Length: 425
Image (cartoon, rainbow, N blue to C red; front, top):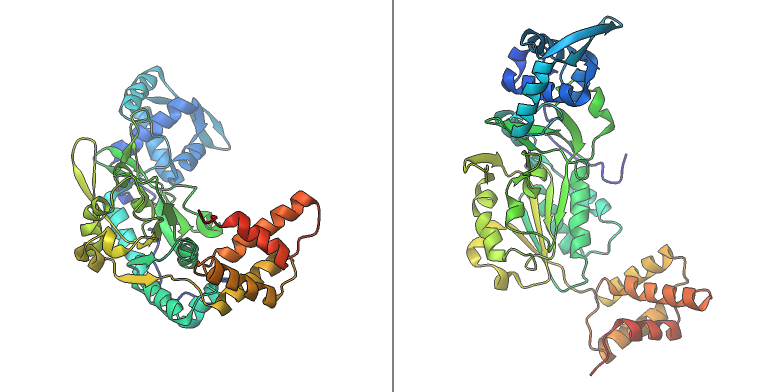
């Protein structure tokens, strides 16, 4: 059992068994024929088995595609390999493929329909994930968190909705958000490689985000879908308004799904909320309907709007006052607000002990208590969760420079404090 293997979820039905004919597929035959011809054009020659593998379709459907392309004089059989036909593109097929490539360059796995994507995404909503108190405590065992904050986090996880983590810098908001994402990620969902909407292609699967499970290739299911861990997407100050809509590539001429669509059925973390290139009120104006009704509207280049699910746990993390960032109307739509404040003396000592143990440096609680007095009473700073890690790093760096064994004593920590905190003007 993994550290986070504690889910109670309703079984999620996967996509149907791999379609064996055109009639069982949810996209038009012409879309698949065009895709197969472009693949054949770029490959030159291939077997029907290779065509099936590249399109993620069954051998039977790939065979039907080859038959149709041959009937239209777009391809020809050039031989047999273990009773499997080898096909190559004809001059007429090459001309047609070049025309198709002016429309879009997509040559990946066959797409699914928008209707299939909506149905599957709704069926595996993150709201179906349930966790218990003891399981949340185990998931966050590597962090020093108070019982009340832990209860709030567990409640928020079960909501499958939106969370606002706020508090001073250095209190661990991003770390907590990422832990929430890792908890949810232990469950499995189906992600399509791409969607087809009115002849337009939208790619969804992103190998950098969607972590494919080992069982994904051995399910006997429709190969156009990938079995993955629930995704986690983190965006920070780089976020712009344009990134919240479909990304059209003028070279390849197909779309890439925006961050929130890639995060569907998982967690979307908006880190350092309030410091994005899009104003907070503009972001929440954009998401007022998605946060409330769990639907999002995305625009194709021709102006057509499509409706897609907004099924994710959205985590806003900010060191700004929420009331100063957005109005009460928007705060109401962010269901859970959790203050991640500074730590007590005992919590600070425990964090320091864990950091020292991680770096195999001797820990003396009396030295740390004197450090607390220096930070709080002399420097007039609150105790923040990041200080133990940052100050120990200062000690380690200095010891490496001086070529000696690191020690967390009064002298080394005093030098670390001098280097770390701003001097009084």
